[in-house]
Amino acid sequence: MCDLPFSFTLSHPMVIMKKILCLALNPAIDISSDTDVVRHTHKTRTHNQQQFPGGGGINVARVIKTLGGQCELAFLSGGATGQLLEAMLEPLAIGTRAFPIHDPVRVAYAVHETSTNLEYRFVPEGPLVTEAELEPVLRMVAASDADYVVASGSLPRGAPDDTYVRLAQAAKARGARFFLDTSGPALAAALTSAQVFLVKPSLGEFEAMVGQKLDHQTVGPVAQDFVRRGAAEFIAVTLGADGAILVSADKIVRLPAIQVPVNSATGAGDSFVAGIVWSLAEGHGIEDAFHFGQASGAAAVMTAGTELCRREDVFRLYATTRG
Image (cartoon, rainbow, N blue to C red):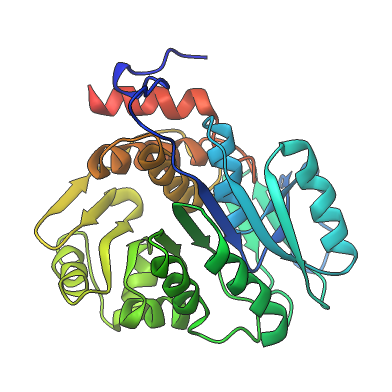
């Protein structure tokens, strides 16, 4: 394991660590494996199977724990796959609270084709949930003493588009900062009225939401317009090979992509969010946290399947990029 960069010593005698609550409304059991060639019709024999508890909020919690932080995790759980998910989370020593639903938790599958180095990802839409099943989560967020609430992932079927808006409002009402990583109508609803602290779409997700083609130059001013209208204090947009940008009302910060060997894109965005939140919780400023999130996301693509990032890779990449 590498030494930590000086500016990221884990001792902060004057800083009280912030409490973090992660939300996973559409969790998954993530399975990944390798094969030489993916073939239609015929059986595709795979090897090197791995399985991890997954879905946005769970991935964020896993990375925060990997980085040395502490957090609570609240998630929806149903069916036999829900029981398996809960069992998979136990060894991770993350404080968890499962909210029961009727339908089973989804199972996602990724296959790495070794002959081409391409990855095929199969992501089910997930269970159908009711308002009655979502309501206890809303009450829990309203009563939580967490300083940071992180919601990451798609909404399950049946959840209203404004579900994250209501969760953000419940968090904000008691002074917590709300972080959001989602897409589609849920993202559009949040950027209309949620007033979140930070929202992190990918470029493709942001383009789909605004209904126009953007690039690494034009996305900043468009995102800044949302910030100035009060949609969020910060918007961080991941740009793939073009890096990432962090937008506030008066500043646009651009970071180039960190060049690393690419093994899997699974969980890179969640790792990015987790790195930002962990860094802020440790008492660092938003731009330092942005750099740390970039390092966390880059570290995630270095690992195979759904492993997410390794702590030593994150700190090494952060130290390299911060000079």
